[in-house]
Amino acid sequence: MPNTQISSQPKVRRLPSLRPNLIIGGLLATIVVSAVALSLVWTPYAPSEMHIADRLQGPSADYLLGTDHFGRDILSMVMIGGQNTLFASFVAVAIGVTVGTAIGLTASAFRGWVEELVMRGCDFLLAFPTILAAIMISAATGPGIHIAITAIVVYNIPVFARLTRGAANAIWARDYIAAARIAGKGRALISVRHVLPNVMNPIIVQTTISFSSAILAEAALSYLGLSVQPPAPSWGRMLNEAQPYLYQAPFLAVYPGIAIAISVFSFNLLGDGLRDLLDPKMSRAR
Amino acid sequence: MIAAIAKRILIWAVTIVVATLLIFLVLEILPGDIAQVLLGQEARPDTVAALRESLGLNLPAHVRYFDWIGGLVVGDMGTSYTYNVPVGTLIAERLSITIPLTLASIAASIVIALVLGIYSAVHHNRIGDYAVMALSQAGIAVPGFWLGLLLIVLFSVNLGWFPASGFPGWHSGMAEASYALVLPVVALSAAQAGVLTRVIRSSVLDVLSEDFVRTAKAKGLSGLGALYRHALRNAMIPVVTIMGLQFAHGLVGAIVIENVFSLPGLGSLLFQAINQRDLIVVKNVVVVLAILIISINFLIDLLYLAIDPRLR
Image (cartoon, helix red, strand yellow):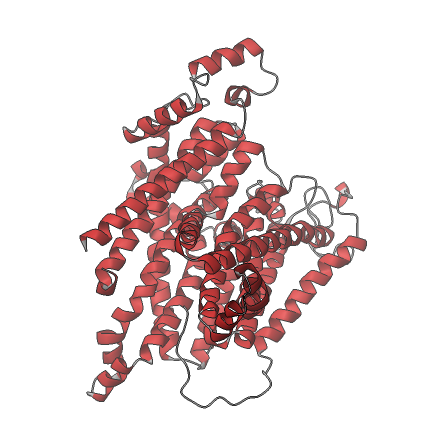
């Protein structure tokens, strides 16, 4: 919830202290991203390498996290599985931020019916859940990673458009904007030169949080079989494939889930920490 | 007041029309030849042509759209291509699982979130507050479908307390049927409870620092008295808004969770229909879900008007 209260205590200027959520979140996010980056060049085994004799084994010295029903190394698959999830989330959020912010800035610069139209459109898109959009598109075009990306973009555009427009409206009321307009600068130039830099902080915070919900959405979609297709490993699909073996090898259902939860958790914490740092008025922790 | 309600009814109607247009566009126009999709690429051209004729696909798009909408209004959604039964009957059958599952999980998450959220606001910045916040972070980070799998491993595989999957049907008695829904409800409500706890906590914190709460305390009301008499009612306004969104999340979450626990609800119907390329079923399931979500948001908007007189 936005907290618009202004502290009555005099502000003491000091260097922002690094909060624990920023440190822990940053550390965990670095570990996740490094492990996935490492998998681009090295994994303990090739992810598709099958060791049928060693199938469904628990964790051991040879296979640190055990093997699946084809005798594939779980650790290698978890490392590689992150590539698609992080890639889809990154691309989708990047498009969402760019397009959403541009729409929000436009709505704020022109107000009137443009703003009304944009806001109604946002309301509509926000009422349409990501997974439902993904299901619909995949029914029409078949599954694939583009489904996850499209659905996450569709969800994020209104999120960023709304956020940017709200923050930008406050900036447009400032004196220095009036000064810029009197100096003869156009709306587009003012939006880019003066408004955008001043609304960046909430956008950065939301980007981090959107990234964590994108990971969650991609995982759910690939669990449902709508995102990355076999044989490429992905966290969500590994959980789906683990399901028939819950009685024989319950550990199969553990590690990919931990990978998802740690990724989501780390970017959420990072977002909270950044919010405290960059955007104290919106801080949730207080 | 009447103008405010009329405006919301108009927005509700327009949103539903836009949603149906979008669904029609994505599921009827985008895939190309529906008859070919239904029968597969190997089908003989004359079979495809016959099906196209019987489904009315040769008619112009706007006629097909209005036929569909007209059918929706009177409850006729056509016949499923794969099940060969009326789609309306199929959906009604499946809703008898999806709706109770969604409502139970929302109720559970509200109860949990109210208790934890108010507790942590009252114990602000103390150890209990930190514990609740950590718990809610965990609830948000753990995907519902994974929690479902973990619950199956623990309570069905190891302890044998609950069935791992399936649904006995409501005809086998409320108790037995509800029992099969316990694990799905837990899996579905955890993430929602996590989000809602944080909203309630910060909303109560905001209100607790307001002047009228301080006045109530100065009048001699105890801290808890001030909380119940004055703070909670005001703190509920943002919470009601979030609940509308929660319903949408709950409904869509239920679709995923049904697949984890093999419950024969709307979600499993949707995925079977996608796998069998039964676009008639997909289209109507999606439109039912969209109408449900849009209508709940509309009702929440009306509720909002009732709670907050300033909006009238």
